[in-house]
Image (cartoon, rainbow, N blue to C red; front, side, top):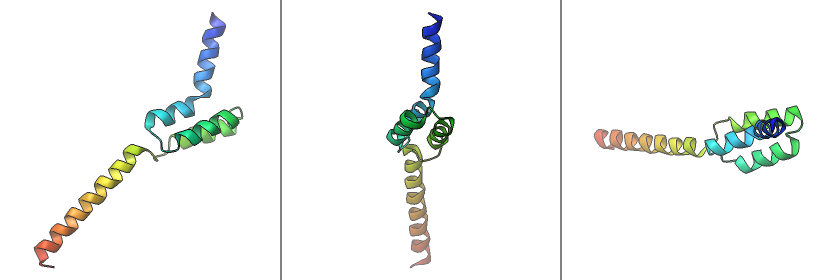
Length: 85
């Protein structure tokens, strides 16, 4: 029983980059998973996958960028309207 628990914990640790990328909604979650599967057994491959999964390229960040762009456009239009341009 202890061996099974240890095996599950090691599997979770091994796939931690994939889990993090999925939970964060990372745009490259599938690529991170592939890297994790094929090179995760090396510490360097696992570390690269983990760092990549923690980068800011997520769907939430993309939505924030779009909101900021829309806000900038509204502000620009308001300034142009006030100045009579």
